[in-house]
Length: 189
Image 1 (cartoon, helix red, strand yellow):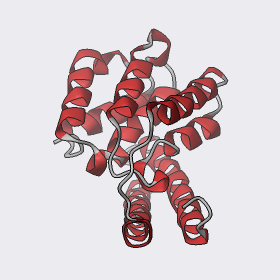
Image 2 (cartoon, rainbow, N blue to C red; image 1 turned 180 degrees about the vertical axis):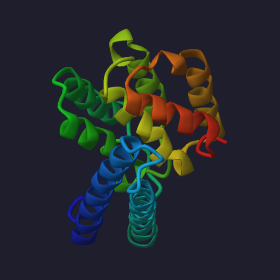
Image 3 (cartoon, rainbow, N blue to C red; image 1 turned 135 degrees about the vertical axis):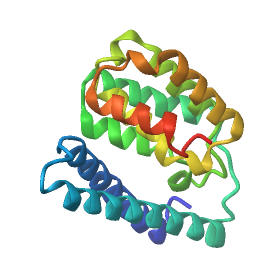
């Protein structure tokens, strides 16, 4: 599967769509609702969100059709990916963090679901007191929005429990926005 040119193309498309989504989301978050540009930025955000969903669907369809998308990673594979994420967080490398988060997605990896270990490790990362004021937390929290269709009921319950216990401790504006979306949106229901 790693040598499939279509997988590589779709993965690149998804990465660009994810980057565009984050950019539009940040622009919208920094725009006051009374600002004349708010409506245009909201439409751009909605288009970027739709594009990201289309890319994920395209990857999923390709994997189902061409690769019988039904594998799960080993714990070692997940731990390696989490180690890279931790390293990028320590370096405050925003692009590296986003790429490391994207590398935990089931679709580009050909996994049939998000492994429990991924959710547990991400929640453990978020419990670190240094994450509460860090922009890095917003990227980690975004994972639960983007991957919500691939999360099990148990994983969603773990996320909601975490947000109830720790959600108010996040102080970075982007993290606060994502916490609110996760708590009150349909992502974890």
